[in-house]
Amino acid sequence: DADVTQTPRNRITKTGKRIMLECSQTKGHDRMYWYRQDPGLGLRLIYYSFDVKDINKGEISDGYSVSRQAQAKFSLSLESAIPNQTALYFCATSDATSGLRYFGPGTRLTVT
Amino acid sequence: SQKIEQNSEALNIQEGKTATLTCNYTNYSPAYLQWYRQDPGRGPVFLLLIRENEKEKRKERLKVTFDTTLKQSLFHITASQPADSATYLCALVFDQAGTALIFGKGTTLSVSS
Image (cartoon, rainbow over all chains, first blue to last red; front, side, top):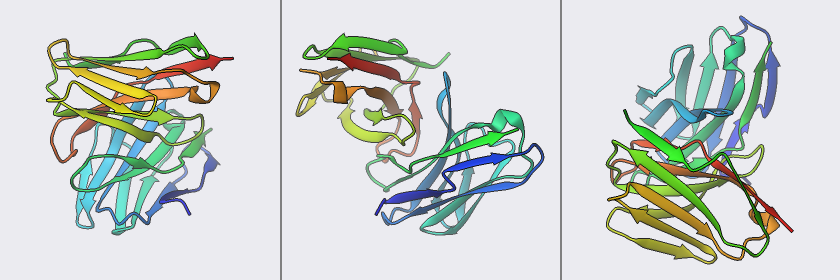
């Protein structure tokens, strides 16, 4: 089984809709991240969490919110989706010492 | 301004040759540097890490160098194979625990047989 899973894998939604992307991990890591990847722009950090009670904004948090429901679960919400949020979204984890990122398979989101 | 640049968006080489990918940065002082591989439609996968006090790291056909004077890391794949075709990302890490990290935009390598 995959260590980091994301649901859904693909999603098409309309402008103005609320959408939630979910991430679960079995690696036992405290640190979890949400990244967005766009062609030509690379991976950009949206939010990160170092434990259940710790939530931090990343480089591009506007228009997004997150919830850390448990050590193993970190969800990303778009309260009112807009077309320029069309992108590939990745969840990642890391342990507290190495900084290595372990990525999920990604969610391809299209906002029409 | 601070920048991290990977040499080119695409690199095409023939099977058996050595692929060399470059990661340059300006106005940063990273503690170490990581390299990842990303296949289409998948998440990046960690390959190698090199610290600021290390000149070179090797893993099978992969070699990474880190020159803090030139502010550059080189990533080499020797005896390249079509299966090495992928996008390769470098990441600068600014603290030992890996808390603060930024990714380059990646170089897409295509190895033809």
